[in-house]
Image 1 (cartoon, helix red, strand yellow):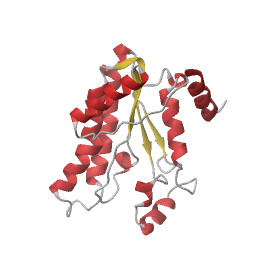
Image 2 (cartoon, rainbow, N blue to C red):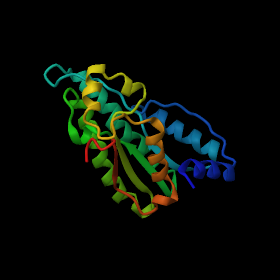
Image 3 (tube, rainbow, N blue to C red):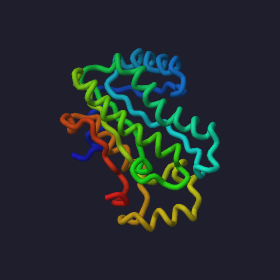
Image 4 (cartoon, one colour):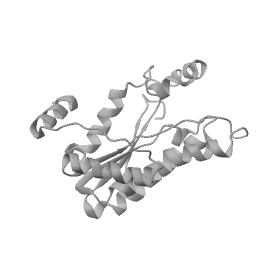
Length: 206
């Protein structure tokens, strides 16, 4: 059975109703309201995926204090804030998946802010996996390379060509190839996996 088939079967068995609530991950009060709305809609909270992220690329010499802080606030502190807002409500046996990046381990030019934030996400994941294990809550991270999303497509074409030349599989990832790994980390098939970072980059960093 494929992950897609498992997902459909899981949703069908639970007659799950999908909903949506918005929050700025820099705003702790908004996050608390979002968690409350989720619990009200679904009767509990089992999974948290931290996927909010922004880019403010510029060389270290030219990067402003605000460009540094904006990325740290969203990409790293936002993960801390979201986990803080949700952790007391997460059911025992739940899962948290934090989205890091290949930049965390490769440190791309012009991404001092982004790479630092995403490296912090990996370390935060390790810490939380130890602290939340007593509730049997698993905490893992994924570190995608370039993905064919709006953010990925915003990379200048010349840079994309250089990146592509470094990927053994010869292409960028599709969003579904990232979400499939997230699904794996949220389901029972990964019940003994915690504190790990799974790299999804087509062999770029191997």
